[in-house]
Image (tube, rainbow, N blue to C red; front, side, top):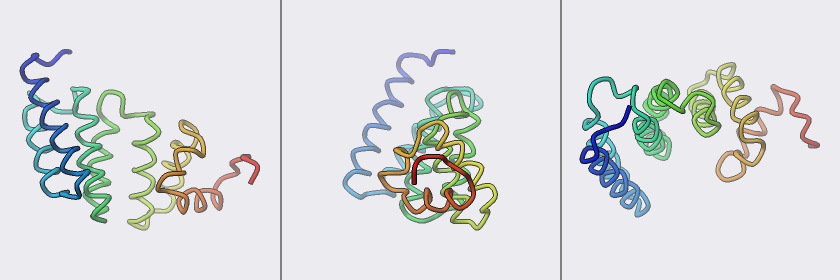
Length: 144
């Protein structure tokens, strides 16, 4: 299903604005832009591909502010959207938030999915401690 062009353009604009202000460290303002974009989606937002990345953006804001329960919920929503299930980044964040919330079995499962889809490189930027945890729970056969 395609969004009407005007709605899609407005969502894109709001997300770009959100990304710009997030890049300046204005995370609350970024979250507001992303929420505005999400509210523009007609019906159940989980039916639209755009919602996957909007939920990811909101979840990243919560992750960066260490509000792990809300971040986990956003990434749980993202995995139910088009292109979310099997996306290594979505599974990485689900694993990270599960770990931070103390659900280490779930964390190991999601981090394994991230590793299988994105390799060790997906952990390189901001998640080396999660890869170290995963190595205690899974035989990764990655030479380390």
